[in-house]
Image (cartoon, rainbow, N blue to C red; front, top):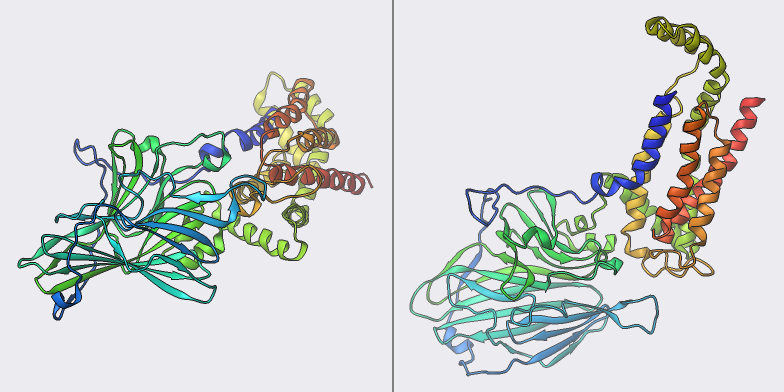
Length: 533
């Protein structure tokens, strides 16, 4: 029975110690080409860009003036208040109306992009192959913009270069949404062709204090070559990374929020991730190359998203942005659980109650497996004296002992692995639910009852982890066992280990495990009664 005990211990401890390694965010490794510091994937096919003829271009362009200071523009809708800067026609900061920094309504609202590199603010535009500085000063067509929930409006920034070209960035807003459409246009009023590409930059501090749970998964991410790629700041500390195959979006994000540039009709040809000269984490997206003849214009379309990683909101943006919510290897199970969590919340109005409902449903679904498992364990326990007798009888003949034990299993219709296999089947469900609870923004600052005011944070008084440990102890005492004395002591130590591990776990996850233990105790009492009868 040493094997069954070993399996039980490994399954129990490994669930908590190695899930972050085995089931963490998946990364596709990018091959290094030669000795270059830039790691590059195969180049995908470049899409066409929109080139059009401009009639009487000079009559439509405001003459250049020597601007020395940039004008800020405030844009407000139902979801956010954003400050745009004429410096690079960039976003200086964006404050989310529906989210607070801490679990207090009086705390400041979450502000994204406010810590961008001041010399390269996020979503500023740079010319690759032609002289367009990311610090070029644009002129806005309006000072401030406020939208009602049903309105759609635009903000246009214009830059006139002394070399004879004009860059126009048009931001289009929806009064009730997070998504922002961006059209970047180059009008060639010079006497020669302009060849190159647009680059857009997202910058953020290279690192954050990991004591803030929001930044547990801070870094760069993008969806390319039909897969999610995630890179921690340390991954690009000494060498940049470049991706250039089928880019859908690129972002800088933390556990709950992200700032992303989305491709529209293949408008992103490559992405470079790096630590810039000022020490900031930087994501540089490059458009397909273009060549613009005199009197012509070229337009590149993108979409911006600066907001919460809430699955329905992300999915509505398109370009597979919902993949930024990384739920690990078992995302096919985790996403239905997340949707179930949201579904029950609509009716009960409390995510803690939703967790309890899901736990009860899972317990009912797995009841037949659990019943079979405990029945097998009970059967193994009953034949334990006979097994010990056989081991003593054939202690010098292992082959005969194994044959005799197998005959004993057949005669009593028991399976030595019958108690472990049902647990193995349930492991993917546990990991999926773990991911759904651990990384769901819905649980952020969501209260349960009494002292638990944030299901995404640890229990401040450690009540639920301790009660969980006690219930786990009683659960083990009720579980049929055929282990020797030493093995039983090892198993009884697990509730203590688990209690200490759960002290800093999100209270929503502890609540699930606690309710699961209570239900299991009741289930074991019921099954023991059935088996004994």
